[in-house]
Image (spheres, one colour):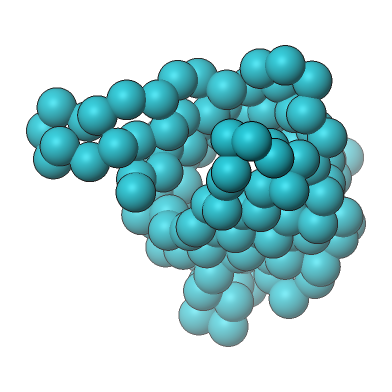
Length: 143
């Protein structure tokens, strides 16, 4: 199964001369999750899973960044469903330039991380539905 979180906001502090000092923070509104059907999306928002009314936002805050050329390992804390756990993102620099639509300087990254749903209290239907989830991340930050 695939889903996409939309309406994510956040900040990136990045000095190209000191990329290992970078810091990133993202707020992920659970209500922004888009899946295959509206009924499935509604079930994901219930207390069985995300409990979006009680926990409307997930959050990632970086703790450290290890840079290797165009790639980085970003260690941080993910808070979801009221539970905070360490998560490691494997990120790749995508590019930088002026966004032709709004004329703002933009920097882009892609990344992946693996988490267990049950670590965050989202273990509904495990093991029938897989516990491990791969997060595929695409992020663009504007100056």
